[in-house]
Amino acid sequence: MDRAFTFADQRIIDVLTKEFIPAVGNTHELQNQKSPAGSWFMSAAQLVNPRVLDKTTAQGFYVVAANGQPYGFNNNRDPERVLDFIRKNGSSFKSSPPPPATIAESDLAASFTRKASETVSTLRAFTRIKPLPKDCDVLNHSVGRDHVWIYPSDLEQVVGRTGKFDMPVQLATRLARYHLVDNVRGEPSFWTPDEVKKSAFQMWPKGGGVFAFAGTYAMQTADKQRGLRGTLEGEMRITGGSLSRFRAYGEAKAWGAGPYTPRPPSGEFPLVFAFIDVNDEFSKVTPPQAAAYGDGEYRRP
Amino acid sequence: MLAIIAALTLGPTLDQKIQSVLPTAKEDKWLQIPWRTSLMKARADAQQAGKPLFLWIMNGSPVGCT
Image (cartoon, rainbow over all chains, first blue to last red; front, side, top):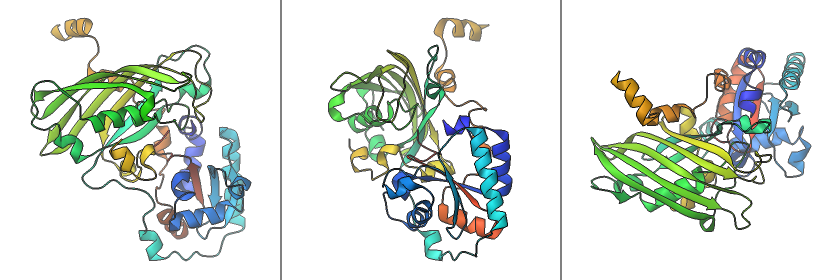
């Protein structure tokens, strides 16, 4: 929501680019896991965000000096209010500059996120509601994003296969539980093993190291208040044992809200998915949401 | 002509379907901002530039999740 609503405003883009050092962070890493970045951020955040002292989420926007001196906190997304927040606290920084910071080399080099190993391939997943039902809440206009990790063990079970065969079960289950989710309006609730009623994907070779796949899936909570069912089709190319290309598209009917995905369209609504291979900076330092605390169960769901 | 007939009879290709889900240029405008992903390196940049940090902190990385 912030991406398209707040940070698409040209005035905000200009002021952040020229007058600030903009940075992103994930509360799951900064607030709940130990690192120099987390310690530094939490020390600053608790001085301006009362929710941090209550041990609730630290999410929001902050203006902070390099030495950790905070100038302000805001958790409102309205572009006018965000712009006012940025300008006001930027002025405070200029009129009351902080003393220099001491940043240890060890802090600069310290890990701050769970990176994939060199052998893991990363996909970027996009989700959107399309077509948008009439009069649905503006939250539903967003694009959901996440990363997907594909492991060498997934590929080893595909290479050399002939005829039609089932997608390796760990890959199929990982897609179903963690990536065929409604994350359009916020953090999704991942499907539990019991909630996945069906994830049946067949694969077949097309030549040149390319394997196509297609199948269907169905998920539903025990109370039937939230669910999703649909189709997925795609292709992956494996070159020298590594994933060199991945493309997939899915269509589903979804229903219901999760704890952090409020205000869905009423009844069933159309959800579409796209998965593409990526190898950019963001993909290297941003694990799948479901692997934020480790990839044990994510890898072998 | 064959391509038009194929498009009319076979429907959109896989790549066309995927393209219909991907963010538009307007939806990706936030990427014009040079977001840093390492807070420690961002601190060093801020110190060197004499600028304040603007932090966008979310439950789930803003550049990767939700």
